[in-house]
Length: 228
Length: 260
Image 1 (spheres, chains in turn brown, cyan):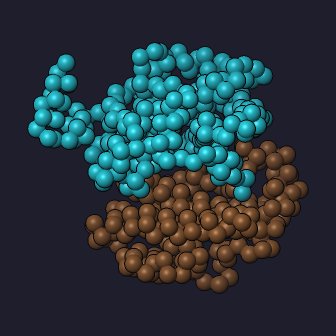
Image 2 (tube, chains in turn purple, orange):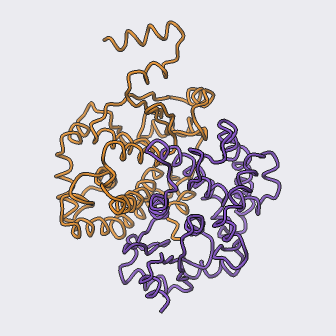
Image 3 (spheres, chains in turn blue, purple):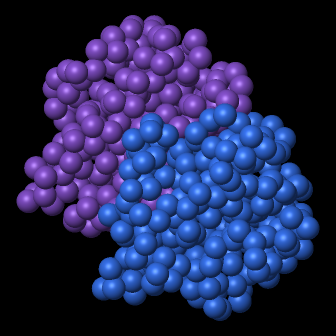
């Protein structure tokens, strides 16, 4: 069984649907860190119930990641652990605080983005307008300003961190929803190019990787069946 | 008092209060005069025995002024001036405080457990935070939902955590951010319904014991910087300051309790 082998081999195992959702940020971070991982996809309600019944989910929710003998739940707990373990969290407490400030803003934007495919039809247009507005007027300007202020290659401490990885993930995702969104953000575009050319990220961006495509009808149906 | 005199002098000279306060070295909290998202920060600083100042705005105009001042990265509060930084985003603030004052565990593994526990509590406390913004006809239903989640999903998890850890604390053998936040949330839920901890003997023990910790005991006493729950008057103020709409509870629920 793949899972048993993966656990024995020490690879993290991700438990989630075969969709982006809340797990995509974890996939990006592990990939950027060059960490191989396995995935167990939840396809039916039974899959979720089984995980709940065997006590694997502290709050009965996914995402859940098996890593280093723990069953981590809560997206932020998972991301914090990976970022710390693989040195993508700054060099000291203060850098970590700044990274957190940037990442949490990105997660606020992502909250709107990841919900989009699952919203009822009549709410989709309004949410998309909100995403466009917040990206163009609140979040992307803030990060463009950061890069402009120090002129360095990365957001914090002149070194790749989880904040850069999350930002790049969102730049791609928002652009899929709003193709011209990056028109006025040259430094963000440059950061995205730079990060995308890192060997680990480049590999993740190639077809056949564990990166998930934009949610389609089938994905949404599956998630609705399993969770709602 | 010396502090007031120096503040008046500085104000007379047109120097912004913000700068003068941060010169005392104490963290300065920027928010409205209520719990909201800042309350967890007050709890954590208090538990750590750290004195702090507060600049509380009372209306939309004062909030606008703060935004115009350029210290809010996303034009949002909470914001805390601490160690030369203008930190925004509640979790960024809390994590910094927890790490600085030794409330974030002593290993990567302990940090992970603390993170799981505080994130679970955040889900529950966000529900409670938005509850006063319910439409009148939804209030009863929303309250039922909160209490159901608290007693069937969250409290059992923390009761189990205390049982498994076999210590007086959630993680390791000393006070952490997770313990402080658990006490905060227990008290918030009890304000929604007294006796909600019946059936959770370890949580009851935990509540009594943790409340006795000197720094926390002091914070729980009248006259501390702890804020009361929103009443009808202050709900009006909050709605004005942040331009909230009606029915925000249900709107935020899908975000807060997203299973996926």
